Length: 297
Image 1: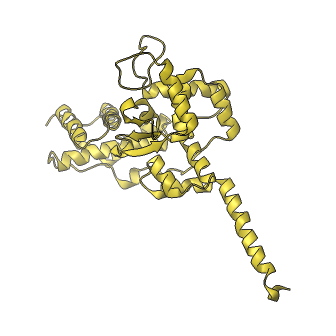
Image 2: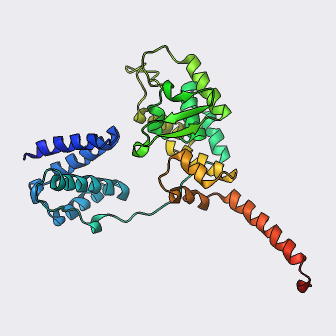
Image 3: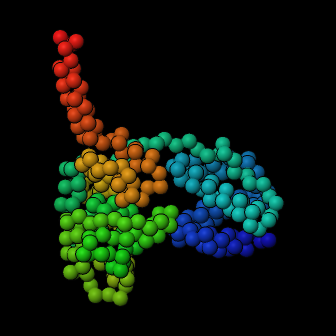
């Protein structure tokens, strides 16, 4: 089988497995870079070739997470070739090829940073976009793909369809998020486009704003405010604020769409206000018990 045919079949296979378009694109892009780099046929690749490829990616200063994503894409392709196409070639990606990664704590914005960001936003569209991330915990791709049909204004809730991992979930709108959203809808140009947020300038005016388009807006505001911020930091900020307001971990897990409670538990390590309150509350109980014990006098 020609490598081109195999890649086309793999693409169809990924789509049948209901992988998101973004996942399919990333898998194929990683494999393309690997094939272009190779100096041997793909069926003759050994673990030594893979090690050299890792060195090549590291020399390009790619982050360990990015390199591991490349390796996973290649691994999945070889697995497909063996299991689905029944081509008996060994998978050259070994477990020890995976680069070790640090697990930094989720970074969130302080109140003054949130204020600085929103004071510098230009126009109702950007305000609504970033308010949905901050108050509803929506991912950038979820905001970019948002349509009116999934919004229940009466109950102030949004159905996230086909989110990360192809999962649906329900999120809710605070008063300020709802007001920001309605303010944008009042000035949004009439359009047959189903997606809510549209490009406002340039040759693509009136078309849905892309994921990258939203990220570029955040990068613009990061430079304008001199803050190290990204769209994902707004999700982290919401989670931290909810935890500091004594929301249950399982509630935050559901709102953010985390598969594992362990992912949500990482916010506990940065939620200093809640830890502080819990400490003093517990200490008051301990000291009252100690004061009431006659054996301590």
